[in-house]
Length: 457
Image (tube, rainbow, N blue to C red):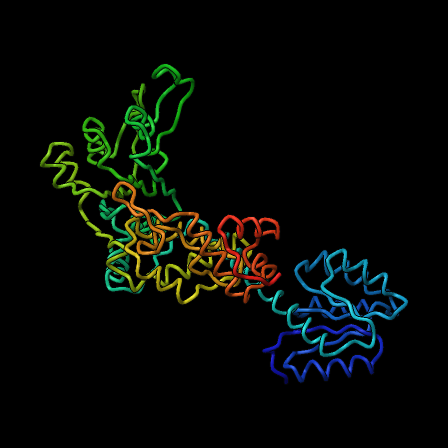
C-alpha cells in the first residue's frame, strides 16, 4: 500500500511495459497509481474511484485519448488530463490542449519534467475540489448563521442562546453597529423548534417612518392611494416563526403603541381591514442605543421596553474580543475565496495589522476589509498592500484633513512601485508583472515618480 500524500493518478496505456515504468516512477514520488489498458476500462476506473489526475496515451485498442478526454470533460470537468503521444499524433495532442487539456508529452517523456507538471496538475485538482466542497457546504445552508469565536464573551452568548432558543420570551439584542446582532437573532431562530417556519427581518432604520406601518401590518386593497391590492405584512409573514426588528429604537411612538398591542393580544388588523388576524411569532429586537435613556427622554415607551426586554443579550464589540479576530479572518477569507475562485492565506505582517486595528465598525467592517483584500490579492497571500488606508494611521505620506488622517494615494502607489523594484532586484519587467501592470503603464509611473535609479530592463 503506497502513500496517497502525492495524490491519486490514473495511467491509461495499452503497453504494459510503459505502464510498469511510469507506475514505478510515480509511486517513488508518493503517488497512489492505478492503471487501465483501454478507454472502456479507464471509464470504469474513473466511475469506481476519485483521482486527482489522468495520464493517458493517445492511441488505444478501442479508441483514442481524445474520446476518453471528451468523456472526462463531460463527467469530471475539473479533472486534469496529461497526454502521452507518439510523433504522429502530436497534432491531436495540441488540439486537445486547445480544448483545455493540461499538458502533453511526446514519448518517451522527460520524466523529471513530467513529475513537475503532474505535481501542478494534482495541486490544481485538489484546490478545485476543495473550492467545490466549500461551495456545496455554503449552498446547503445558505441562511444558517455562523457565530464565530472562542472568547469568553462569545462563549457566554453561545450558552445563553442554547438556554433560551425554544422559549417564547422576547429577546433584546444590544450592541454596537456591525457587532453581529442579526447573527444572534438568526442563531436563536435556526437553533429552535421554529426553524422550519419563516425568519422575517425588518430593518426599522432603513424604511421611512410613513411606510413602516404598512410594511409591518400589511394592508387591504383601497386602504390608501396606491393600495391596488392586498399586501401581507411582515408580522403576518412571521406567523409560526421569528420576527426580527433590527434597530427597534427607530420606531415612532405611535407605531410602538400598535406593536405593544400585538405583543399583548397576539392579534392585529391589516390597514384598511376589519378582520382580526391571530399570529404566533417570537419577537427578537436589536438596538445600538441605550433604550433606558430613550425611555427617560420620552422617545421610547416604557411598557414596550419591558415587553421586549425579557431576555437581554449584550453583544461585545470586536475590540472586546480580539482573540476572535484570526478566526473571523479565516472564515471570511474562506468565504470570499470560494466566490473569487482563489486560494489565499494571510501574511504575518497583514495579520499583525488586522489584529492591532481598533475596528470601529466591528465584524461588519472586518468582513468588508477581507472581501476587498481577497479581490485585490494577486499572489497566494493577502499582504499589507491589499489592506485599505484606514488601517495605517501612522504610515508615511499621511496628510491631515479636517482632523482626519488621509494617506496620499500617490504616495501609496509610489511606495508599491519602489517595493516591487526592490523585490525584483531592479528588474523592471518583473516588477511590472508583479504589480499586474503593462510595461508601458509601469514606465509611465517610473517617469511620474521620478524613479531613475533602477537600470535593469
